Amino acid sequence: MSGTGPMAAFRRHPRAWLGAALAAAIILVGGVAFGVGAAVGAPRVIARAPVTTTSTPTPTATVRAVPSDIPTPVAFPTCSVAKLKNDPALGAVAASVVDADTGQSIYSVNGSIAAAPASVMKLITAGAALRALGPNYQIETQVTANPADPSGVILVGGGDPVLTAGGGTYFPGAASVVDLAQQTAQYWTANFPGVALAHITPDATLFAGSTWLDTWDRAAEHDANDGSTPDIVALEVDGDRATPTALSSKRLHDGPGAIQAAGQAFATALAAALGQAPTSIAVDPPATAHVDGAAVLGSVLSPPVATLVHEALLYSDNTVMEYLARLVAIKEGVGNTFADEDTAMKQAMQAYGLDPTALSIFDGSGLSSADAVPPAFLTRYLVKINSGDEDLKTIYDALPIAGRTGTLASRFTGQAAVARGQVNAKTGTLSNAATIAGIIHAKDGSVLSFAIFAEKTDPNAARAALDNLAAGFYSCGLNIAKY
Image (cartoon, rainbow, N blue to C red; front, side, top):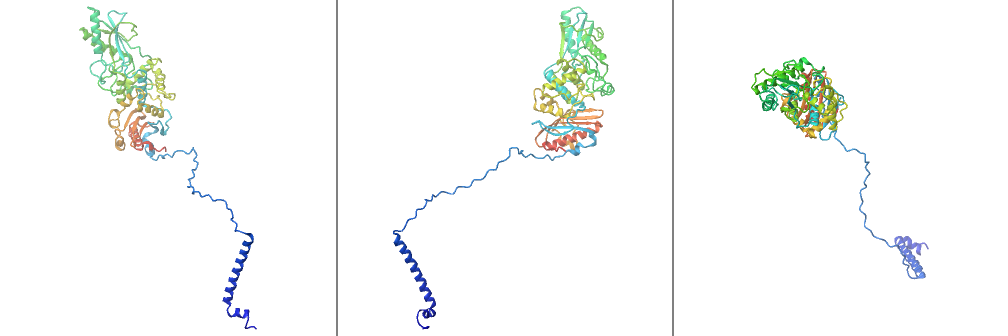
């Protein structure tokens, strides 16, 4: 039995039997499925939700919020002038540098501390004169009739610092007492025929008070052969110089003596114009003699204030600046003494929009060591000068140019020569200080206003150090490091 039947056949042909079994299973399953389908009926259609086809959206970049208070990046100044600033020849140094286009301070060392500006003070006096008097103002010297003396005239001083005796003068275009004498002679002969003119009374009462400051060195600035300053009186000729054609010269007289000398120069010229003997006209002592409304026999005018300022800044003329300072005080209605100049010039600076409260002004030339001005005030003021505000362009045009003109003609040598022709500045010197302030046309194309004061030092040694530091500012431009 074992050899026959289905099991025997499976053993003999197992693969065939497995294939048949599998086929049978498939038929069975299909039959069952058919049967189920036949029992239910027609095949069901299963409903599906419609599928909507859309394009894939393009991704957009997410914009991150940026805080509004993030500052704009700025370059860190890296051009150091520390070695130049620390030169021992500068002594106690104070400096300020400002971007002249924006008014922004870019460098300061003790810049807000007031110190003696020396002749840099002339920048302030020049601005005050241009503001109070005007660039076209001319100073008048008159001759009037003398109601108290029918044979005499009055020579009225108007404070002309360059009035000349007519024998030669250092100042071009100066008014001359020779011209004044000729006008007076013409009037006299036409109105008083046959009457000899016998007396001249000089009147210099336009200025009052002391004629010399006690903080000025009289031996050096008045009596020395290279003196810079006369006694300040409203009537004198040639700045009371021993050598009228020289800017610096020994001065001859005290205040009253200078007035008397001016009267004598006029008397000599008037006698010649009248055809009288040289000594025929006496000069009376200076007096208050002028009477309002008296007939004017002659009048001469100084060069305009703009011309006076230009020459005085170019060559650092103390005489012109002292006279202008006094005339500013009178014009401002403050008074007519040295003490009145402080208030008057501060008023003028305030009119330019500057705060003058830190200034101490004792004179118009800067000759006094008591004058005090912060370098930072000067740099703010120089921004206005550079921009030509009002009539201040007159000052810029007058500033000496490094290595080229005026008091800077022989300066900016050696390592400072790089800035020759690029610095327009006023210099100053006292017995223990030297200063410089002005405008720099820097190497990077920027324009800087600057002021440097060197105190408690030998001014002769300090000058080169000042020039070197200014040349450093020129080379660095707006990239001056603040350390």
